[in-house]
Length: 198
Image (cartoon, rainbow, N blue to C red; front, side):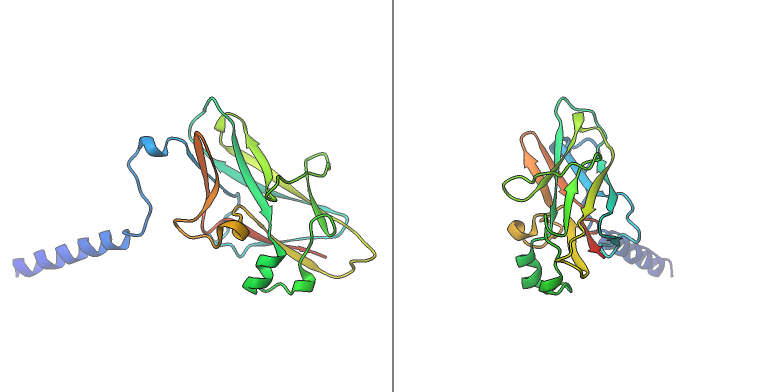
């Protein structure tokens, strides 16, 4: 009887460890992760990417994002965010009809907290800087444009991954930015939000 209990105990413990085998873990203080950071939307909701936002034309939407860091550094960290590329969305058939994909500069702009229009870099990324890698929360501001020529409802995806260049996000493909000496990753369950302009 005691032998059977020992076998049951071993099986139970093995099951617990097997259930964690896909988690990404590393020891506390691991040097190779000392300059690795994460970016995500502040309110995770149910830990999925299905949370959506709606903004009325001629209004500004602010979306808080959170930078995860536990150290103060001698360098600043730049995080990138993107508006989904219409070619990518059309090819992936993600539920936005091609004629209803919102266009930067036509249907909306990314702006700063004073309403000034932001300019993306050469790859279409908008930049957010975290001085000395200090953790915190900042807002991404989206100004919806009212236009007589565009009277319908339009949508796009705000995301932390350049899916046009890098493809779909996976546990091993979630890079936001990598420059010497740091790397920023996005969370697979918290890297994108659908924005609808009405």
